[in-house]
Image (cartoon, rainbow, N blue to C red; front, side, top):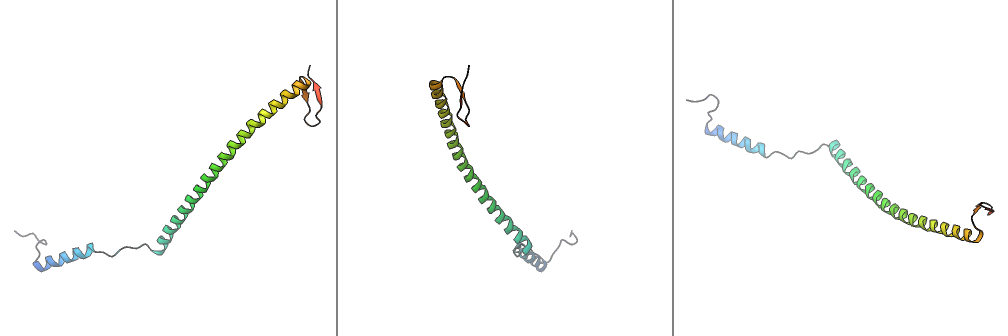
Length: 108
């Protein structure tokens, strides 16, 4: 029994095989100009962003260093203030000082 449309002669069979082979060897597809430009723009912007993030990270490291130095200086200033206050109290007793004029007032 023969199914209608499924029986092929040798010549038809060979022709079908050639068509299948030709379909598997298709030409490479290529983005159109607009798509290619969009892709390039995205890549360029990504590279710029990576550079920007790197610069930000570098600045952040530098700022952290400055912050640590400022904290050390703050500690030094606090110590200077304590030492000065102690020397004033030793010399003048418990007093208040007007920083603008240097006037000393006794604290009772």
